[in-house]
Amino acid sequence: MEEKQQVTIFDVAALAGVSRGTVDRVIHNRGEVSKKTAEKVMKAVRELKFEPNPYAAVLASKKSRLIVCLLPEAEKGEYWDMIRKGCLEGAEAMSHLNIAIKIITYNQYDSASFDAACKELLDCSPSGVVLPPLFKTATQILASELHSRGIPYVYVDTKLDEPQYCAYFGMPMYQSGYLCAALLTERLPADQVKDIVVVRIIRDKSRKSDPTVTRREGFNDYIKSNFPDCHINNIFIDPSEPQTIGKALEGLTGENKLVVMFNSRIHLIADYLREHPCSDRRVIGFDNLDKNIHALNRGQVTLLIAHRTSLQSKMAVTTLAEYIIMHKKPVNRDNYAHMDILSRLNIDNY
Image 1 (cartoon, rainbow, N blue to C red):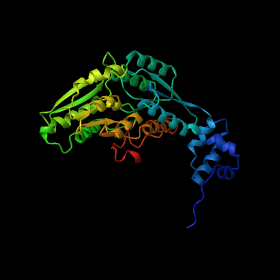
Image 2: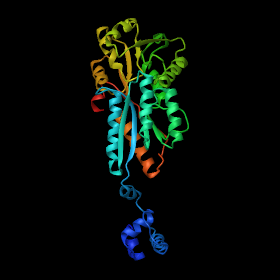
Image 3: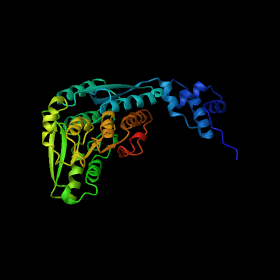
């Protein structure tokens, strides 16, 4: 069967008896064309069933769209640095469509810093925004303002349950906590699940930021359902004062067989675990940072629950770009990342 040739703008021009430029002006509504000529062009479009290439219109307009990524500050190799790299990869993938990107950062432990970053973002008048909602109330205010201005936004890492966001890319947070609890206690009898240590990060002093709360809820629900007599002991550490971490962990003794952190910084306690070994201790963390993988390979960490971190932010940028330019809604509003379970046995192939 002979393949049907694609109709081009030149075919339309030939049938209508006009130039290619005239056809372009008519179908993209650019420049003045007489009513009679426009009718001839549109008649040819209908007869040939011509479908204009929407990307061509974007390129011809040469109009740049700005996407702002509002992210926490991060050192090289940290979780938010990986998210930043994904945003840049997404912008590069969409650069042919005149997408520009601006990354605005803030101190994730300082709500005032986040507020200042939000003001800077709004002053940019972006076409779209990518952000994680670390400060819930402040993000709700920002989201409402973005919505009122007609600026679409996409969540990464975590999301708020509200009706206005364009899309979400990241782990299913509740399920990831539930999975973590199941892995931590797998094949253990109830008498061996009496005490669990959850190591948590001291965040902003005003306690406005709690990004792992939904993951904790999933974890706690599993434990309560399956081990109702288990005690969960929270130990808080301050990553900005590494010299104090060892003292904070003094309560973590050899009797504590089950240890978990719900953020990306399980490596912060690796040295303490190495100095206070316990042969049958289970330790679970999240995310495939190089430092976490090093702790996994050395045996301080039992398992990591991870996903392709930079991919979520890359997809967030590309999806938002297509929505802005093509008015193409994402197929799925919530795009959950695969939860990969990493151990010393499979980490080399990840």
